[in-house]
Length: 371
Ligand SMILES: NC(=O)c1ccc[n+]([C@@H]2O[C@H](COP(=O)([O-])OP(=O)(O)OC[C@H]3O[C@@H](n4cnc5c(N)ncnc54)[C@H](O)[C@@H]3O)[C@@H](O)[C@H]2O)c1
Picture 1 (cartoon, rainbow, N blue to C red):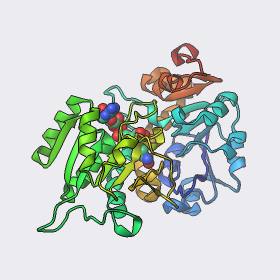
Picture 2 (picture 1 turned 90 degrees about the horizontal axis):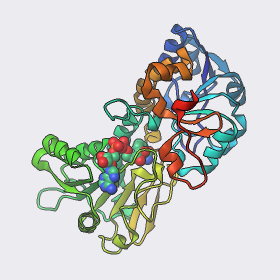
Picture 3 (picture 1 turned 135 degrees about the vertical axis):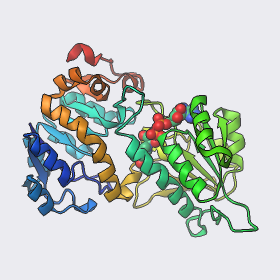
Picture 4 (picture 1 turned 180 degrees about the horizontal axis):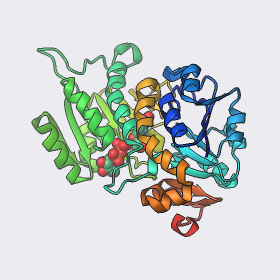
């Protein structure tokens, strides 16, 4: 198969869908690999490294889009990329369609086979292509939160760990999955007081086993959330209902009850955000202040550490990518049922139930009946 990869064009996005090592793996499996010149520079990979690995380097993104049968990306395509779609193209990337109707329409109209990293669910319920980015975003959320608690950014002026004789910061984490657990790990490591809330009591039991007395676990409900965030210096939004818009757990009314200058990092912003006051921000202007609370709502947080992120992401995407390229999408699904769960659009039909449920205007089609 002809597979390829273009430079990401989202604001301050420096990750890339394929590393030179990936190119070698696809080449060894018998595929042709087309890479846009400069695609890997932001992640520290030179054109020469791709060339040495066997890639055909191409001057323009359009030419790569036109040539490949399978495009391997990181972020969802942006509107300027929609006209580059062609019928039957396999687009293997993050899509996040539940919060992006224009893109959903473009994929359906273009009859693109949209294979979304974030909805590929393994047999044990894990989300292996979201997990590495969630690990990074979770760890980064505390780093960013610590920075924006500094006074010069409008923050409270509080050091997370405190020093002897001063209070430690209170960190509240909404959602104890991959993001939440990784945020928790760094927050505990920095010596803050950590409270983590989840609706999944089994997950809370697991977190209690792992972190022991160093954290407080709480069942997630409106009163526990309201009570916890009132005392918080830093709130991390990390809930997920796969494929659906995030529930708005962090209400506007809470802001006035919180400490002025407290920080809210809404990692779940890529699914619409779990705060009523969440608005998407970008790395070049990542925060805004509403009712005295600093909001950080960057939808592609791992883009801030592209070298680590690219290697972590492609470590996870390679094996499914090789299955799809090697057998074609249809046969790859038949041989490995798990891949069905990643197909969001197919031949002009919306095939992810949770995405379809997020809108009134689309009919859901079962992918098993189409392939
Ligand atoms: N902004 C970014 O750069 C970035 C990067 C990675 C992931 N994310 C996003 O972060 C979010 C979390 O991802 P994840 O990998 O941790 O997901 P996950 O599935 O591992 O964890 C989500 C957790 O939320 C919990 N949850 C669901 N509803 C809840 C509620 N009402 N109250 C409390 N908890 C609830 C679930 O039980 C689960 O434990 C997703 O929206 C993901 O897309 C964003």
